[in-house]
Figure 1 (tube, rainbow, N blue to C red):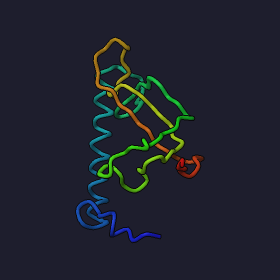
Figure 2 (cartoon, rainbow, N blue to C red):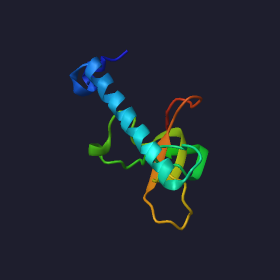
Figure 3 (cartoon, rainbow, N blue to C red):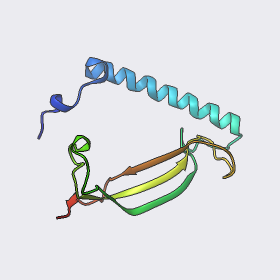
Figure 4 (tube, helix red, strand yellow):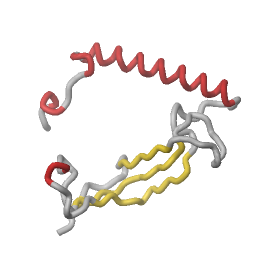
Length: 122
């Protein structure tokens, strides 16, 4: 197991300070959800952000370029590495909107439960 202190630090400097910051963040996100629900006339709360998925792919793969510059290499991001990922593209709004409505877009690419270990190609 790695030394968590080497890579991670508590927001606010201690576990208790971080807990308080997270509680505030949760409260703020809940306020945003309620505002979006009221403004949009929705019957329920979907998500704080990115309520409408445009595309979801469960069997995508993330492949790191073989010519990745040295200053961009870190941890798992190494030339030729390949990872199974789930990909989700969505609009950024917390309210579901028609496709023609202008909005920012969100992207998420991550691995999670049920995913296999990273592989590298030669």
